[in-house]
Length: 549
Image (tube, rainbow, N blue to C red; front, side, top):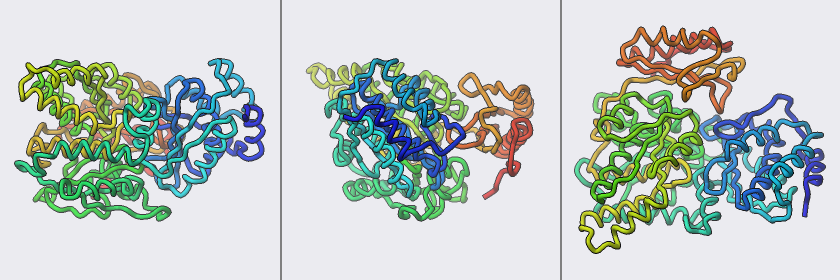
């Protein structure tokens, strides 16, 4: 079996370090230009094997750059239960990526000694990739690293990020969570969805028709089995399904484009009051939107999905007669109106954490039922095993009423529709459609739950994004010194104003969020804060402005 000295020698020969600049394992793993990642992928293959041996479990490695342009790529490791890599090991990932070739042998030996890692087990590493032209060669580099340390790579080919998380969870639960194949994934979600629609496909204002924007990526490929097998139960009309290498991945389309530009993506017809949904390049985010009879664009993002899901869960739990600790996790990007609605109308506690799904997922585990969504549409629901067991007792109890049993049965099926391992655009879309049907709602009914404060997202390209540091879940800027005071002064000018800035975890820029009572004020505040960031944090390129559609 290969050892770490063999791995070191192979690295120098086939995968030498080509970049001088350091790269950091961020909220979404490593992400940069694809031509800079070959040696990084090899080293992540090595680290995946070490992590798998340490955990005595299968580990995943997903090659994707999500919503980034097609010329970028990246990699993130998936831990045994389908969750993101443990935070303490992110530091090891950064070290592995940045040491010189002559230090690689030493750092492998260091981590083996630190964790007393046995080097004899033949561990499996599940590998998935998105549709980028660079993904096959980068996957080869990663699998070279797996093989060099005696691991066994299992290549799932082109899959969504949530599918790979699902596969890893299935494998490590010995198929208790599901069957670790694409067909197993489709069967689990489709079976649950059809059971939840067995009373009909339309109700009240709900119409079973939706426009789907696949972002010209893997989400377009993997929705097709659902379109074929759901048939008339949900009529999905697909757009943006261009092939690999066209350069159109995420270009003027996808969830990130719709969320940031507040407009229809290329290719999707703006038909009045028709539900539209866009996923991102690796299909772990989804946002809804529509255009009304006056030509006005309306966005229903992760905040709207979170409130819809939390409200529906509360209704089911009320019917079942069980009182669980239900909580909702948001980031600072959550619209202030959504937070107020959840806490005051739904009476559900809300926690605010730093941006990055790993932070939301971790906090959601503090609740018996944890709902988490970022405003960008990335989120899911986590149920503790004790919750599932208690719900099952309702079905087995002869004293339970028919209302209790029906609600308990429905919730157990609903749990099977949810990908608890990570945010899953397709699973979340089916969840939203299930709830809208149950309520008999169209998009206008959904939107009417609360009136959102107008908000705007901007980004500023800077010389060094890490010159911006924050605290309090990114809501307060610490450096550059004096910037937070300038932001506070700008916010004070606007009624219901709120704004914060943070360094991007995926791009060389600083992200700006602003909200206010009116659209005009939100846009003005965003631009003013962006200009202040440009001035005080080393902005480069064009000074940011609002682009009117």
